[in-house]
Length: 114
Length: 113
Image (tube, rainbow over all chains, first blue to last red; front, top):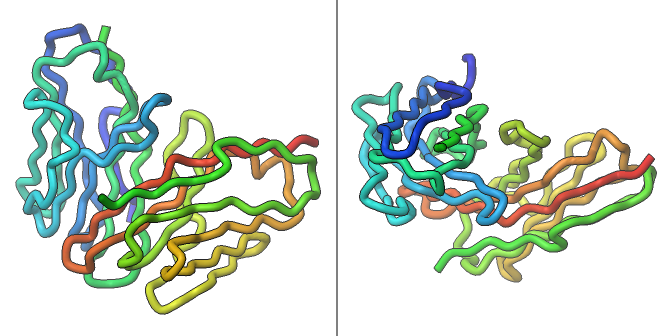
């Protein structure tokens, strides 16, 4: 397996624009996590899914953020409208829930909102 | 509230020294604990997973322990090398059914040649 795949790797956008980040988890994994990483706040859990169902979105900072998982192999994190304070690295991770196994991370998307 | 903290926040040691990184968690109902390494500008690489039935896990020069009752985990690095310089993060997994993964604040390690 190619691991957790995120796209794009880098995104530069203007304030007010819509941004969509994408994640393909490892095949067979049934839990998917979205994190945001900044120097000030470290790694923050935004939302996570089990079997494509959102379990906890309490970390989503504002209504401008939304996430979907339409099927087991794809998830999106959308920011609309984007603001400069959304600039961060966004990571996606997946694991296979019933088993006592590792979580694996994607390489992240570095978002810059100007 | 489930929280994971790491101390120290930063550590600088000379090459060859043995060192210990600490991770504390508030909820002892932790399912398992995973240690990661992150190089600057890169993603997270899994180092060790201490499974729910284990108290310790070893990989090469790394040894991680888990004490659920005291809410602590440690990562021991033997004979440190400049290539070990990175940020080390621990993550606690909670709730077998819900699989919540909570990260610590990280320890920035610098190994001086």
